[in-house]
Length: 126
Image (cartoon, rainbow, N blue to C red):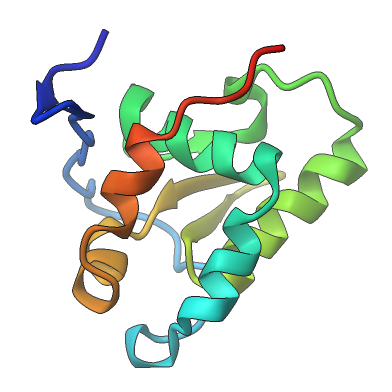
């Protein structure tokens, strides 16, 4: 279980390693729009992806296989692309693999407290 501050799980932000590939196209910080970010986060699977990255990251970024999601690759590709294009995640291409991490500093600068809400969200397990 993650450490908490006032009931909110602690968000893990790992340092960016040197020599990373360039990120795939994404909106600049000043172009991030709340309605676009919220639209991307409105899907429970995408919300789960972001929450897992925030709370359980074991490395700076992760491939889609790390999430252990039982979905077709085409479906996962769509969800990861939606998160990147909304500005929620940053993706980099490593050969044939794309890895993602949450743009924590950018999102906190534009929408303070939003990621704390995502971290505090509990998936419906019914």
